[in-house]
Image (cartoon, rainbow, N blue to C red):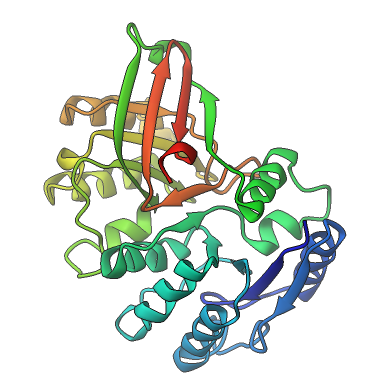
Length: 304
């Protein structure tokens, strides 16, 4: 079914226009109507336009009436804009049916929208890194995005490592929230980190060494955020380089440490992050987390 997809750039500037053109062509090939924001290629230093330009782009996305408002890329820039975003307009757009979709730096926008209005946005692909790739886009990513666009998505599932297999079936209900760990850690102490209690927190990151991941998790821990959650889901932490003086300190070390700090279960392998295979996750939605053996599911369709 043909849907209207609005493309905008709220964070870093586009470096290679061909990436956007490829992404647009692929979305059109899937049968969608694609509209580019007038400032999609704007540039001011490293940003996709100055702050006013990017705030105006967000406002146009909210006013577009599109089925999906999809970011071109993440990078950096949204935390600068949080005090000035018109959250009521975003929430009204969500109420009318617009799904705001993105990841990475977009975590700041999603968290702030949840904190300010309770509206649901979607962690999912970005136009450039997912639809604009030189090869073929990942099939699972594309299928999950199509489910999101059509409103048919009801959940996602993945297989846990053998060591995490549940001895007994587990079912947890809570608000799904989270995203990029670096961005969330940078928002601690601000009004725009949602005070979710009894939530299901999902996290991912890129270019962050395990010790930095641990340091950011420590911040969330000591701020009381991790202790308030019912479960923590870890996606992919990619593109970092071990160094000789790590002497065995790895990401697994951090995960083991985290499990000793909180009572809530910690599960790994969520198909989300700066990787080709990524699912779409409704940030702010009430979900059920179900684990049976090595099979983990996050389900939301029946709760809407």
